[in-house]
Length: 173
Image (cartoon, rainbow, N blue to C red; front, side, top):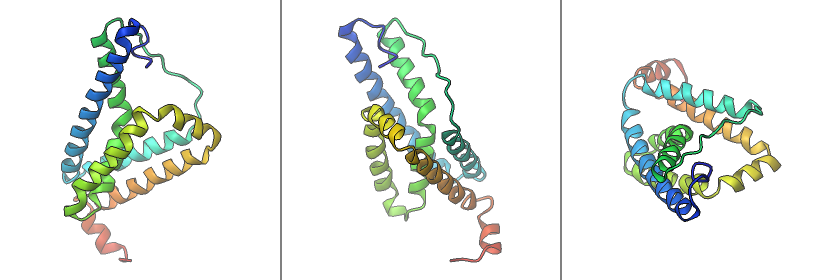
């Protein structure tokens, strides 16, 4: 909405719809690529560190607001929506891919689809509602950060580069 607000009224909805549609396609492709790449040694470790950093950022209370450049054309608005979604969805893509990668091979694609089907409407349609709920119940932010930390830990110990070490040195439950 912020990226499209400087457009004429008849183009605003089009920019939001096209930008959101392109963001959905980008997110699906990124998630499928992320699941495949999680098999590369050390990549899960990097993803785990990124999730820990993102989770920590959720817990840090910042009052600074980023400035969004107001684009003048529909193409610029759609590009802004895509870039913003890419930056803001990295944690979502990594978390959905990490959660799905723990499941048996036969269920991974189904879990990816469910994860994306659940997350995309929440992010695109429900972001305002979620912000209001988080303002009223800040514990949700802490629980989200804890979930990211849990997924980061699982990613770290299941990386192909160090999984054998953890299996050898930690008792199995």
